[in-house]
Length: 121
Image 1 (cartoon, rainbow, N blue to C red):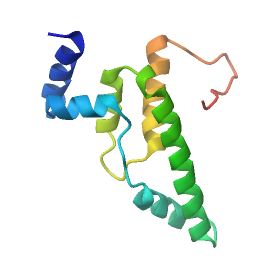
Image 2 (cartoon, rainbow, N blue to C red):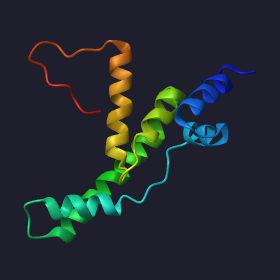
Image 3 (cartoon, helix red, strand yellow):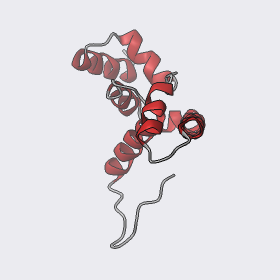
Image 4 (cartoon, one colour):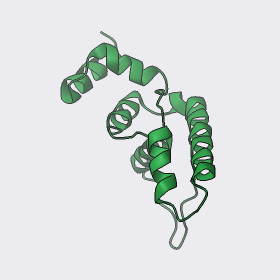
């Protein structure tokens, strides 16, 4: 049995998803409709033009998804599955990217220097 399959089975039993669902999550960036999340963010903003805010948010989420698509295979499958599974209510690609980057950075022991602000990638 391949190592990846053993990991998928272990994770699937932990999170209650099938191996097939786990494999699908690990293979590619999920397709989400971020309109609901962006609409809520646009309404919560302090701007009169919620339509423009909605458009900017959706555009930003699409750019983030495209970046995730380019880098998806660089993240460990277990991290990809775990981060996708945490996106239960109005998922966004920004939150998914943040989860994956945090797992990567914490796993590598990377720490910003004193007084340094971590840069968004």
